[in-house]
Image (tube, rainbow, N blue to C red; front, top):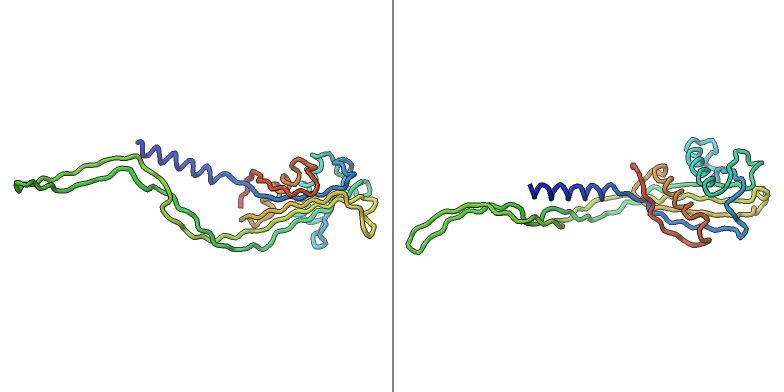
Length: 221
């Protein structure tokens, strides 16, 4: 019973660890000296190859708009009513394959053992014996296994400009935000919430400082 309890406890710990997921991110922000997280903003695609009418873009756009609202901006669907225009882009690469060597863990000793044999006496007699013994099990590394994994680079970018200068040859940029992440999920839609969370954590953060964050995740990928 004791051995069974130990095995069950170890299994629960391992399952719990496997279920803990994070998305590792790096974010860098730059702000104009006059920037304050307030005023109306209109979000549109900053990628000529991505239509503002794309259903995927609209899904991610709504997530960005929610974040902008949460930090103090007012979102408008009419660019003519906006104080700022936020150009939003996102992307993911084709992935890079690499080999990993993973440790395998299991029981390394202890438990129930069975022994038997024959004992010979000096007078020529002999006797047989058998029995079982029990020791507390020990666990550790019992080997390694090699696997191949593919990692993907994901990035989101937000460039906010003064709406009155958007038609100029060099519009006035008031905010630039970049968040990138590398991981085994090749579907950006599964990690974009966590990437937005990283971008807008403690917003506005220190201008020009690279921040590395691990965002708790419910990635299903």
